[in-house]
Length: 189
Image (cartoon, rainbow, N blue to C red; front, side, top):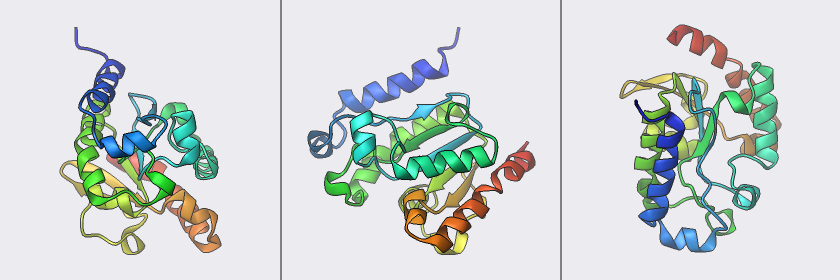
């Protein structure tokens, strides 16, 4: 009998710990923040790296940006249990600095492994870092809200909820882009 998706995701998490991916980052973080939600999700949201609250609680998007993400999920009649939420980089960078290119490169194979297990219909990237890992050479300001097919996967670039918290215009743009998700899923089906 094939191993369950959750068991396979747990294996990926264990590999990160066993292989000591980004030991410097791991040293400065409280814990690995791997991902949360349904292993059968149609939609996977990918952020850039955990922040302070995420580092403490061990779950992605639990701070103010996470609350905004929850509100947008509600708006399209979904909740956290129905989607999967993760980050490119699985440890909090010191002082919430941006993840470094080599850190993103080190974690990318594990994100790809997560996506292979979950097999989502749609990957929604949150912010430019996660978008550029999956869709290199694009500018988020030009492509946000436009689904792209890349290597057999449909990817929807979205602004990061944290950026929208401080910028009213961007907040509305993100809400508008988010509202497209149900119709994108319908088209994929």
